[in-house]
Image (cartoon, rainbow, N blue to C red; front, side):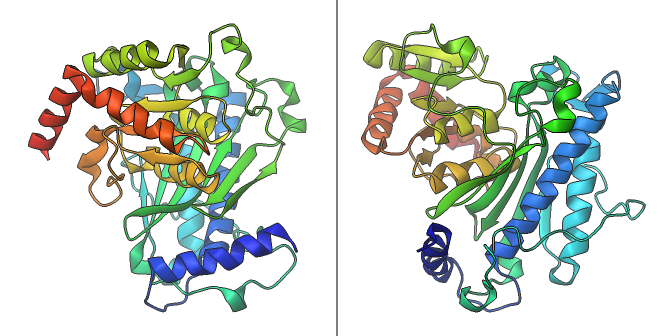
Length: 355
C-alpha cells in the first residue's frame, strides 16, 4: 500500500482529535498550498540575492545586530501571505508573519496555489475531517537566518510556513532556497528544496533532493561527537546548558544559524539535540516543530514543558529543546541536566515571574 495513503489514514485520526467542528477547510490541501507558497517565498529570496540587492538592510532593533531586515524578507512575506489570502479568501485564515508590515498588498498579482501537491493522484477530499478555520493559524517566517543571508552563509537560510491548530504545531513546510549553500549560476538548475510534514504522521521532500542528512556537515566533521546544535549567544543560561551537556555526554557544541536550520538538523539526525533559551516568535518554531515531530523527534521548551508559544507569543522566552527520532530518553536526560544548573533554575524562575 502506498505509504502516503497509510499516513493519511492516521492523519484523519489526528484531525479528529484536534478538531470537532465541521467547516470547509481540510489539512492536506491547506498544507499543499503552504508548500507552494513556501516555494514562491524561496524564489523571491533567490531573486533578491541574484540582483545583489543586499545593500538595503535595516535593523528592526537598533541595539541588536541580529535583527537585520532585508528586501528579501519583505518580498518573500508579501508573496507568501498574499498568495495564501487569495487562495483561501473565503475562509479568512489567520496568517501571522514575522515582518510587521501591511500584508494585504493588492498591488501584487498572484496566481492560484496548487492544492494537489500531496494527493498522489487520488482524491483525498473524501477521507479527511473538516477543520474550523477559526482554529487555524498560519505562521510565516519569510527568511529565517537573515543575518546569515546578509553575511553570505546561505546554507543557513530557510523560508518557514507552519500550520497550528488549537495552539499546536500540526504541519508545515521548510523551504531551502539554496540547497547547495551557494548562490551561483547553478541556481537555475537547482530549484529550492521543500521539506514538508504532518506532526506524528510523516514527512517528504519536493524540489531538489536534500544535500544533507544524518552525516555531520562538512565544517563539523572533525568535531568530536555527539553534536549539539546551538547559536552564538553568550547568555549565561546558554553557557551553562552547553557546559552541562559537554560535561555529561562529551561531544561538541556546533554552530547553526537560524532556528529552522537547527531543528531541521535534529529532524534529520545530523545532531544529537538543538536548544535555545529564547526565540523571536511562533513563526520561528511552528513549521520546524511540525517536521521534527513528523519525523518522530521530540520537542519541548527548554524546561521540558510543552511548547505554548502559538497561543501565547510571550512564551518565546521559554526557548526550545529538540531531539531526533528514538531519543526520548536522551531528551529527558538533557532536561534533567539543564535543570540541575543554577543558571537554568534562575532563568526559569525569572521567566515564570515575567509571564
